[in-house]
Image (cartoon, rainbow, N blue to C red; front, side):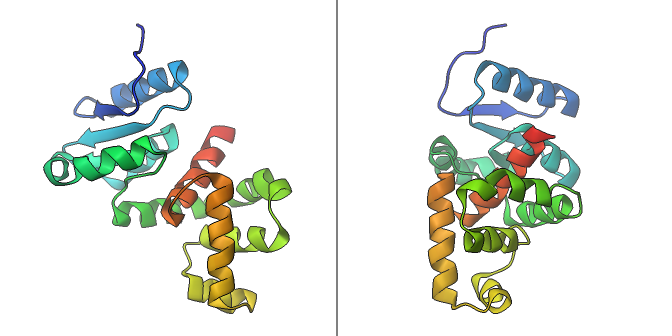
Length: 174
């Protein structure tokens, strides 16, 4: 089946999880850089993490669509992520419990300064700027400078997007 080109693919995950995963894989096979927003009745943690690892850039429940779709579509189309904060936090924790953090650091280490690598490592632990500053013995303003450089180098606008992008890259490399 031919998959048409779109700026954002909106996938209704009302179907079985395996079918939604197969659809995401099919879209990404035909359009590797595709931006996919998944809509479902409800999003439990394990299903959401699976969809994010498969390449979904946005997650919404049917109840959220009316209010949030207008904001989510342009963000996802622009390369960002739209994920409920509670799911993002849990996703980051689940990945950090795995073995992928060192691999993420190795993949980007050649393009980043030592301090950027340290800041990124702390961002991947979901630490706030103030906490990173304390750990690295630098000012909060310096942390903001490094975070800004990281966002620019990775081509994302928000730290949440950077975190998800790093974990998705890790998932693709596995």
